[in-house]
Image (cartoon, rainbow, N blue to C red; front, side):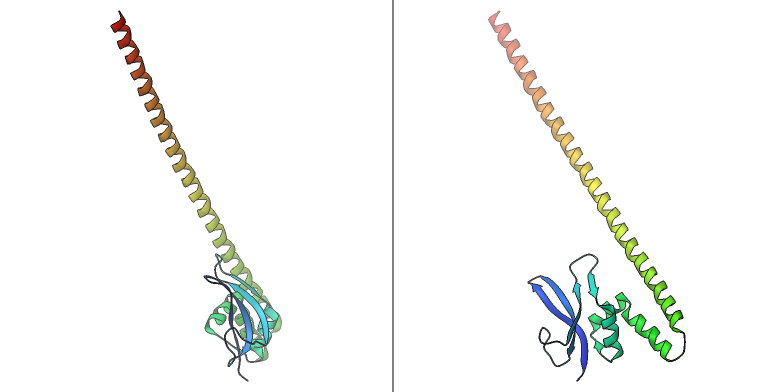
Length: 170
């Protein structure tokens, strides 16, 4: 039985989320599966991936083939890299401690990049908000000046009318 790690679509129309499942390759996309090992939410920014790391690693080691999309998701979470390092340990290319140290360093670097990206997005949001507030303030000031000008014109025309009436009465 050829086993694949793939996505199973869930959610409403135009608001998808996916279960990351281990299934027989002959089963339909949203049909029967062996085990659900995670979730993938593509609509969030950045996309959210919840994954049972140990089970995904187990299935990769037992020969499950990931689909192209799942391969990229597993790569992003580091499952494929960890599998690669463990194969190196089996071949005596490096020790388990070295493999764990390499993986921990990779994971720390990945988290730093993700945090940097989130920080830059937050800064952009704050700048856009400040610019919008400034535009709104300028628009309010322009409108207030326009209203004041109309009020001044109205009072000056009323004064002129009163003066004209006063001169007519005299």
